[in-house]
Length: 509
Image (cartoon, rainbow, N blue to C red; front, side, top):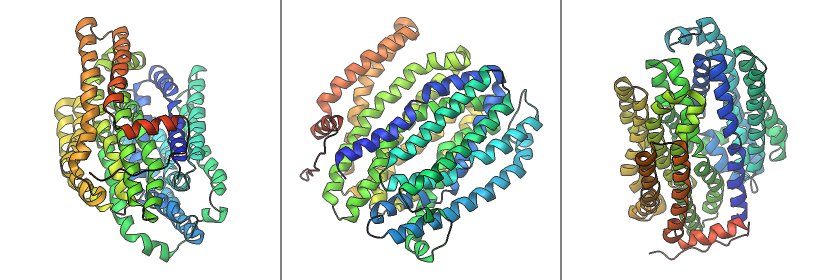
């Protein structure tokens, strides 16, 4: 794949989400102020639970689909069709089964799990049932997204997601602006989940035959992917647990209102992961094709450039979230909640940055067919993350909710990276640590200094935070231009001009 194609795919992945941020803030403010804190809390709780279920029930099929479609869409279209039909059976069957479970168990959850303050349990039950079943369409939607990723046509799925997301947020704002109530918002959100899945069903035949969308069964497909699928099933399930365990623990031990503003803050921090995820999503099919073609030198060259790109670009994103979180959350929830969220947001940003630096080694391991590294270490980390999260929330409240996620990435830094480096990259682990150390050092020097000055000189006023962020970003950019890999600088300049860049592997050290 040419570099211009890769750059366009990264841009498409980013462009599909960034425009929704401001609307998300406005919608959250309106829900919080007009419907109450319980309303925001239960809506975000339902969406979180569905994300956990979608991750656990993914069974690794979406990653398998990307890998197999990227490698075989041209040379074995019959196999790809059978793969998609078999995956459809799993996803749609899981949707029907779990949606029924959600509807049946909603009354118990409303009474025994979440802690309501102003909303009655009957209203909460209805919200759980309607929004819970509708949001679970994320499960089959993941399959259709993986098809677009596999054929490297990510503009399609990002256009659908951005269009539906924009309409969903605008509709929510309009409903609340004209005096609509909770059920009007809930049914609107549910309807838009339906529109999203229908849009995929209409557009997917552009990249695969329409017959591939009919659920079916192929023993050959099952046998061919059984081993890889087992590890990917473990990875997807454990990743969902590691990512959302903090919200689930908060929902059990604290009030549903706290769930609302903590989950919303987490969703804003997660926006910083868009770039790393966009790079990983675009690189996975590209690296899979190179591996299928036995072009290991080209794979490693592409990996090096993208790893540096992720490390240097994502740090300013998370620094910006930390700097702007206080004024942004003050506008949405008030100053008291904003100050309570300041430390959790900072720790979350650190954890999400560490996650971003692990994206490319993880994607590389999948491309070379070694998912067992991630699955085994993710399982081992579970015995650290869960007890740390539960204990931290019980002792420190919402501030402690972030410590489990941070501990997960510290564990991977210590024990996971050496395995990725040895078994997949076939390079010394110290090279990876050097990739990460440069941007972290530059960030501490620039953003750390700017934060201390804004705190000591102006008490973290909005003006001081904005000026500090701008000056620190300029300084960070200048440092990056000096310390970043020259190969990265050359590729970035060419990407900006959307030129095709030949991959020239560096000589081994």
